[in-house]
Length: 284
Ligand SMILES: O=C(O)CCC(=O)C(=O)O
Ligand SMILES: [Fe+2]
Image (cartoon, rainbow, N blue to C red; front, side, top):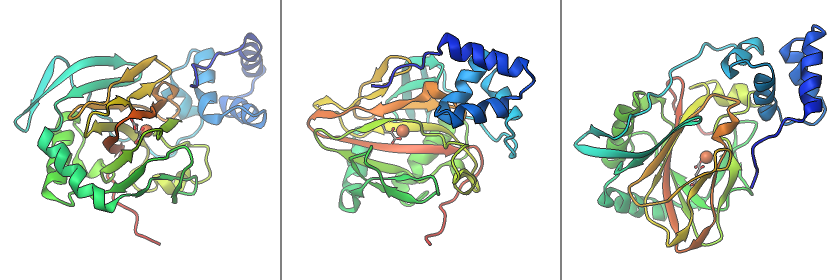
């Protein structure tokens, strides 16, 4: 498991000396990339060394599109929405994260699994060109519902929109994933890397991702939780519960992983939200 990045004294000193010598943040980031640093982590490192908020650093590295919408984190102990009482037993501020108990009813979970099962395919991830491709880091099977594809799907989208204060049309289609014993989703970020060549294409519609909601549709017998290794948190996969977390691009505290299922199976529905209205790109 990846652990929190440690910043060596040498690197810290080099960043400070380079900026003192008059080089700007973009130049520092470029040099770090040339020397093999992961650009996604470099921003966080530079922000920390220079005691700058990450958002200020994005301004200096030229993010052309204006900042879009952000989610409104629901507050503990509970929120009532759409006739459901959603309890919030765990809150974290960095990354912004809430565990949401009772987002879905048992019946809704069972119905989603039943609808998704015949449509499962080897799960895909978005590659740097914005195309969907088989990803070795993710061994599960999955499928997507389009926005408001069925009354049940639309109802859940409305519920999440009300809960997080972001209109339904900022959501990507709900994704269902199915994991068998041994299958997992290795540590990753859900935000798109601004330094990847395909970033412009991926974010042309909808902009950057701003938050994820992972809803557990069943309770695996053993394993299968969602781990946040930077903060040492593992959320238990439990039918009807969800974990919501919000992030900015470059926020490495939002690193997370679907831990291997050890016994039984695991079904989740994932909702990714964008900063601007989003619609599915047309098939090529
Ligand atoms: O399976 C999990 O617990 C995490 C899933 C996830 O990270 C994702 O769908 O982006
Ligand atoms: Fe994820």
